[in-house]
Amino acid sequence: MRRAKPLAAMFVISVGSVMFLSACKEAEAPSHEPTVTITPAPTTSAQEAITVDEPQPGDEVIVPLTVKGTAGVFEGTVIVAVERADGTRTFCKTFTTAGEAAPGRGSFESQIAFPPPSEALDARVRVYSESPKDGSVQDLVTIPIVVSPDQPDIVVASPLCGDEVTSPITVTGTASVFEAALVVVVKDASGQELARANVLASEGAPARGTFSADLTFSLPDAPQNGTIEAFSDSPRDGSVINLFSVPVTLAP
Image (cartoon, rainbow, N blue to C red; front, side):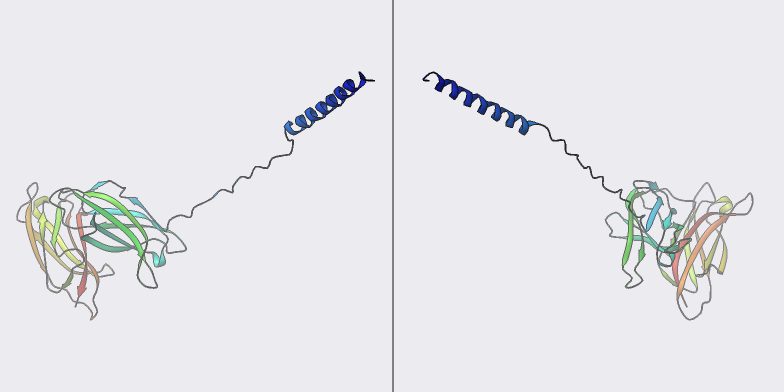
C-alpha cells in the first residue's frame, strides 16, 4: 500500500498534465470564424464650376493672350483678369459668356490685351464668376504665368483696358504692319461699330512706328461696355489680322 500512493499521485499528475496541455492546444488553435472585409464605396468628385484649358500654369504668354476653358456658372458669365503675381496691379479685367449657363456647361474664350512689359513679368490669370446674391468672387481658378516682353504687331497704348472714355476719343499706340496701314474702330456692348478710322503709322513693317487716331461716336444716356479695336487688313485676302482689342466703358 505504501508503494501505491506514489503511483496514484503520478497518475493524478499525468492526467492533470494531459488536461492542461489539451487546454493549451485548444487555446492556441487558430480560429475558423469567417473574416469580413469592408470595401469603401468609390468616391467621385464633382467637376469644378470653371476649368481653364489655356494658358497652363507656368506658360510664357505674349499679349494679346487667349484664355480658354469651360464653365457651368450663373448666366454663363465668366470674369477674366490678368494681374501681377502678387496681386498689386491688374493689367486687364473683362468678362465673357460661356456657351451654356448653369446647370448646363459651355465653352468660353477671351482675349486679353494690354501693353506688354519691358521685361518678362511674373503674373497670374484669375478666372471666376460672381455671386448673384452679393457680387462676391466664387469658383475662382488662378493660373500662374509669365508675360513676355515681345511686342505684337499692333499695340494700343491709350486708352487702357477698363478706362472710361467719352467722345471724341484719341487712340494711340505703335504698329509694325504692311505699308504702315491699320484700322481703329469703336464698338458698343453688342459689337455694333460706332466709329472707324483708317490710320497710317509713322513707319511700316519691318520697322515699328507710332499712330494716333481721333474718333467721334454717339451713345444713349447710359454708359455701357465697349471695345476699342486696332487691326490691319491681310494683303492676301483683306481679312482682319493683328487684332488688338481693348475693353473700355463708353460714356455719353
